[in-house]
Image (tube, rainbow, N blue to C red; front, top):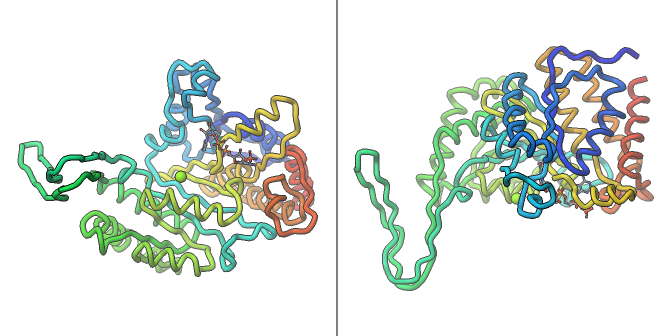
Length: 403
Ligand code: NAP
Ligand code: MG
């Protein structure tokens, strides 16, 4: 078989620990034998980030702007322990944070649904994608503890000194106060990313906030979504047979629990943090969750939702066999290859991405899986495979599909 050709490079961001090991296996077993892989390689492994003073992360993000599509391996976010372990020059920021700051965008997380790994919620038949706004609110807050009687006020001072005040509370007894903010431009780009992603994946969009209680703050989110929908997207949604609707967050939660799935749920920052953990664990496993950063300018960066699986890596270093789930990392690759194929009009590449995903799903549905899935599957007598055995099993299924 002739290898599939690629016309435009894909930005490849390598990473750390166990996922770096999986990365290499995936390339060798599932990609290089079939594709004349055209990537621009950036090593975001912590050692190389340290050598380059983290410039490599910035370069990788800039390359994503140039080529439009990137695939990223999980990476270590340094903390004190990592500073010592890797003898770092400084405590570098999270690569995902750096990339997000450069590309600006929204992270969409979608579970990979297979038969035999049933969601806890019986009626969920299709994936539910969480779109989380990644700027502001409680994540950029200012807080105070007050322990003497007094009054807390919200004060806004314009550049030319004009003040607006409003009373928060008159304290007679100790208490707590918090201030937070968001920016219209950020909410607008969040809204555009959500509408574009809905059109892209042909799914309805739901958005929930609490505008009955927060009549200015949350109401502004609701208003911005509605305005952008009407001005820029309503016609396209109508044409595609899709709907957008807003409701109160509690009503949305109730509807989500009763729904079949197959839609995108846009969440404010805090709601997205909480709800994405609920949705992913209810669907079975973090190792079965994909994640894509979509920028308002139409750049895409695909990755797995989980981390570098440090515990498994240490076992691997001791020479012990691991059974680490590579599904989300494989799907990061297929997501990126499919998008590359779409953008380049490369039908072969798109078809390959579909087949590889199909091969992964049927391998698991056939009862061959890694340990994390074997302990939760409803299939009888699953066959527990090592990290490499699973990838090789997928390759066998893929070869059958490609025949
Ligand atoms: P983690 O890598 O997600 O792993 C936590 C635990 O979840 C693992 O010990 C394992 O449980 C299970 N698990 C996660 N992914 C799995 C997989 N693919 N297959 C099988 N089991 C899996 O989180 P962490 O250990 O808290 O973080 C490790 C490093 O990852 C940290 O340095 C953190 O900074 C980084 N991180 C990076 C990203 C990213 O790049 N996007 C995201 C999150 C964390 P058992 O050990 O019980 O088997
Ligand atoms: Mg969280």
